[in-house]
Image (cartoon, rainbow, N blue to C red; front, side, top):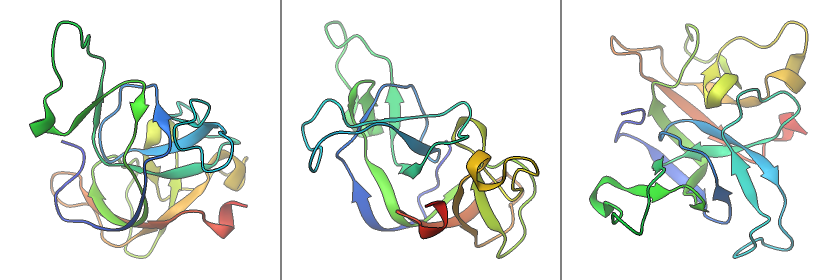
Length: 160
């Protein structure tokens, strides 16, 4: 599990399609743009970026994305799973408790996006915000199991 139940989500996005296998608690980036609101537009896609350099974060993934052959198996709705290639439930504003953290955050430290959707308290020394976009702020330190509280709001003016 990468996302604990204690959270406050003020705003969610469901307009974007995710084509990657991913766990809840990771932060996603825009991949391609849809037109208008992008609702129902297959061009509006997000990604779990191996390297977020030059990309814009969109929010925190709220459910598991699995690769599943739906002609042989049905989705397990009780596990809140989605199939790769469907719309993602993305928290765009609020806070979550996640273990998708690289490094050792301190209370009030800024949270930057790093590899594979994880957040870190360390901004890239060479690439700055272009290499490690600002996501939000750590509102706790890691607990004994590696979870910490991260607050965020997208779009974030600091990422512009």
